[in-house]
Length: 264
Image (cartoon, one colour):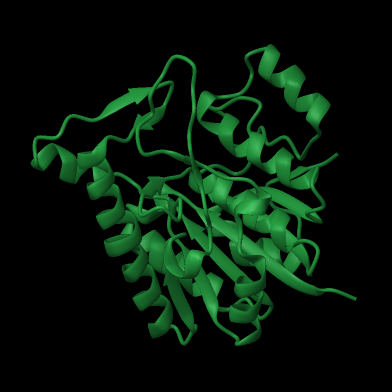
């Protein structure tokens, strides 16, 4: 029987709220099974860019990462945020160790190619991008990897990479070794049929149901990347995938009834 492994992704709203982050990390630190944390960047990169007078360009909700912006996101994501989370986890007696994808060649990316848009230093990854042998060794040492949204190409370049995708591909890569449960934690109760009604949680979503909801315009655009990555994980041998509210982590681990489950 495979050992249980939780891969948990957190995003900006949580990172930007010191009190909520502390509460979440307390719940995370209490998980007895093996675990990995993946985090996004929050608003800090944008705030710092504004202070430095560096214009931020977004296309369809995705950041264009020029060299100046790359310097900022690497500093904020892999530096400030990552080490802040690791320090808080150490305080909670959780043996966390922080990484970018460049560290020990853990996640190797390729520059995003697009026919019409130059996204700059944005990296795309697949399951094969992940150094699963080394990550498994870290886990066996009873360390808790904490991944930022920064990868590299092994040619000396860093890349800004979507944290939802990082969580999904790590889950896929490690599913051959572990019984992996992937949790996307965010500021809603789950996927909502009505974004204004927190009680309208859709309990289960399959690929077919996702397509229908998307085509009918019933999904908020912010949830689409999470769902696409969640479906990619469940289709590639990840045992369980959920989208849950960040404050419900402990409840979910203990009772498994919070949020939205992604199904085949």
